[in-house]
Image 1 (cartoon, rainbow, N blue to C red):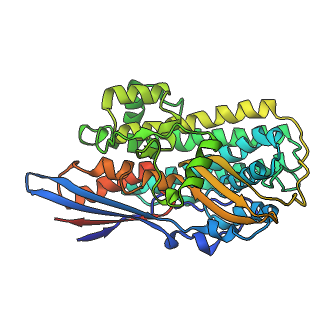
Image 2 (cartoon, rainbow, N blue to C red):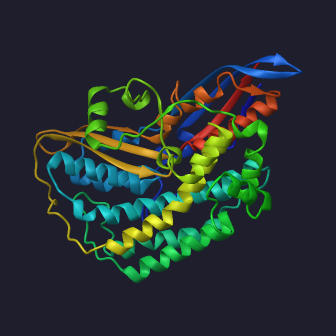
Image 3 (cartoon, rainbow, N blue to C red):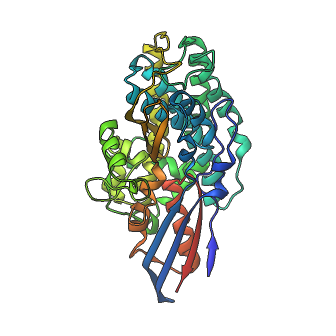
Length: 414
């Protein structure tokens, strides 16, 4: 029996003015899940789970380009998280060329936080309704995307915020606060319908009221047979240092397709970022490591984003670009790291003597979470299911919580 799941995490979020590249359309990559079940009418067990992630390697298109051109091109090559991709490449170029663009980092965090909220929003109105058996509602993203699209020009009116060395940063505080107010309003209406839950008791009460698709999905995931299902016991990817990612990517060409941290698989994404949030701690204590914990982390991530953006807006200051065009020629290597809704993204590149990219590698959240021995595979192996159909739907739920950047196909064998 072969069952293809709904595409999970295939939102169409692109940086403003950046068309989607055919190289990164979801059909060009996939996560493949193959299950082997043992048991009978009384219940079954996933005896073996094979997970394989195949992502388009659009980063290869950067090789041979001058550093300045590579930084400009990067956002165009990725249909998802284009802003985070572009900034990771820009930071890698800056590191390779010795450019200090720290004056732009607060603005850059606002850009990636707004993009992450958009990405989470796609899950809220497309993937989560599907997991409840309902139709997707992409038109419900209209107001959120209108607010998100107002952020880049309110920071960089010339549209040059993703260049290496930074652009002409001239924050329009009033426009940024208006955009943030609209984002927070969308979250309140589409997700929380009131104050976000702060602990497991709050979450149970909030789920019981069923005021949104998110609450109804929470009610489903908090049931005894699902709350602790899919726990993987994989360590969280706490590493954020570009120098460490540089070492990992530069030292092993196969690292991007088989990432490991301290010789073991690791999980990145909302759970890693929000592991110390009161909601996640409380839900973990009550329900363990499984679907409920992953979902609580996504809610916590959504609740934290507006507060973090508000704090960033309060300290923004104008800044000019660091002279970098034309960029100085010369060899060098560097790594840039960005946060996305799905987790941590890193780009490494090496320049030749003419200042062109001689090599370029990246490792994305999907590479970590959907590795052959990663969180999804570990969470599935040995897990109990009722039957084939139940196995497929549980896998879909776990895939949705881990949120790959490509479609997911599920195949079940007895």
